[in-house]
Length: 114
Length: 111
Image (cartoon, rainbow over all chains, first blue to last red; front, side, top):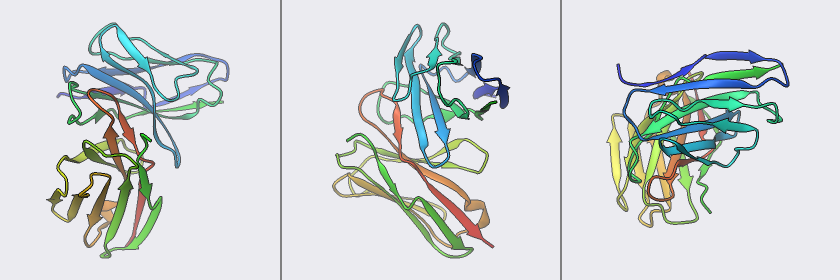
């Protein structure tokens, strides 16, 4: 089945620890994105990548880091510098190349920092 | 100026009633996309509108794009409990830039 997979679904971490969220897609999409969702806030863009070995900061990149070493993979690291990391994290991908392309989302990872 | 504003933020309806959510932009949109997110789920693409004044239907859902391409609406006729969720509109600024999402409208349907 083609799709985009995020793991794990639920993640608990102690305050001050870095944590990496996995995102893998087998849709052969060039573009990948990380969004953060908080209640009542909609989806806010953290980072995005339009091509392998290149990525750009989104609106709320502080305290996060990413890598794009392979087309299929776009992991997100939530660092200890992120002030309020508890949230629902969504990874998405799209074909790229124009404005008329839809985004496909993974199931999300719900991160809780205690 | 890149944001899209959605209203209302919440809507509670009795099953069988109609529902409408609106998406507004201060700038002209090249296109608008609509997504649905079920409770506990992830956003799923519903439709894309591109042309001025465009109207598209999916069963009980009607999507409209304004003549000036600055607003859009999603109307659900005779809501059902399966319509429960949050509906988002989203835009791309240009080219391959990421989607910018509205804050969504959360729909609750009371059986």
